[in-house]
Length: 296
Image (tube, rainbow, N blue to C red):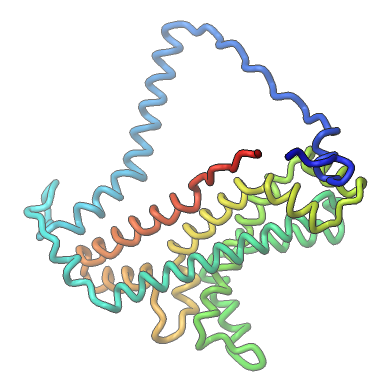
């Protein structure tokens, strides 16, 4: 049943506001054969560079995790699953800790980043608005080790003593992730969304309805991107975490660094591959599109 615009200000706002039409697709420009060849060569070089920098290291880690021995050869001397079989309960505890901290940091960072973006929307970026925007981006310009040391010194005594709690790891990672989550939400606040919000409010919609029916549905892609980005950054964070983590606390990056320092490269590769597979599965789950229900 269709809603009545007289009783639904959000629907009325959506019906009466004409959004700008999409740009028509431009006609392809004819290029010479030499230009096409040059473009193909540059594309091939870019693909080769990306493979060399990003794909090849992952392949090496995968091969190392199943190598029985690998030294001075292009490929391992043999293949075995013994490094996975030697992983103990402490390794899987570190994996569970990484996932728990990652999800917590992603959810908190997304919520705070969305709230900050909505609070600063439409403000003149001078005075208090400029200060708040700059403060939100400060962790991007500070080395993670320096930020971790600052948090450790600031919160190691009463009345706020976090030095012996895992909360200090969540806190410092949240500070590192928040700028990215904030920018994801701020970039999604398009001018037409502001117009819809103002129109719905002028028609009598309460702020809670405007947020629930107008703002959040339009920000779903940005929220998913913020969750995925925050989760991925948290899983790979090492500098600040290594500075503040309390005794008995360990994430996969901490365990991997400890194994590498002792020369156990192949066991470290096995644990790294498990973290990679689990994190990719979680990111695909976060980015998965939920099918919309059809209106009756």
